[in-house]
Length: 284
Image 1 (tube, rainbow, N blue to C red):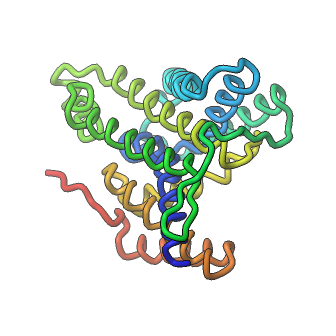
Image 2: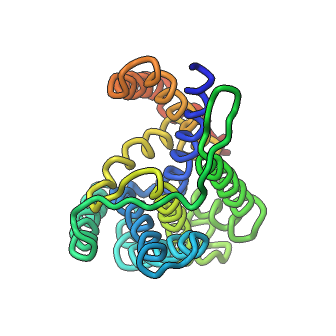
């Protein structure tokens, strides 16, 4: 049973990593608290629903479309609203919360208030010992690892990534050295939003979605980022792994709600003694 719960925890952790990477970029790197994060996930899920169920296109097209649509939406949000609110935490919270409410109502007008569910694009299961694991869960783990590696390479091995890191550490100095700070802000926010929409497409076949389901994801995403450490993507992996495995293992032996209470209480205690998270990026 323990092995089964641990394997299920891997899938939960991979899903949470997908849901958290966008927030890790927007919150951890740009220092913007985006309360519309859950709605961007839902928008990505509805884009995939439109591509697959309405337009009858392949799941691969739905993946790309979810990323592109939410990235463009993120670019528009940053250009029109967020760029005027950097450093103004209270205003940013209010505006992004208002955006989340607007997105909910727009989605409700277009698709209705009911729940929808997508069929899994990969059927069948794999037997690991006595544990039966759906193949789609394995695909989620592979996609999560792939997106993490791609993001890591983008931020550490490209000129754009170097500029993003420079702006996040010292905006004034980066601007003095010729970096187009406004352009970098827009591209960073757009990439984070795109990853968030992609996560929505990935989780749509395993969770029913509705216009108001975004709140179910934002709390765990925020906890994963804060627990691991907001300054590093590796911290998001650690935070997602701890929360995902803890929920799966504790929930397997106890009630699921009770397990979530234990995990949240443990996270609060950890943050009390390590306010910057488990992994802290050194800065000069």
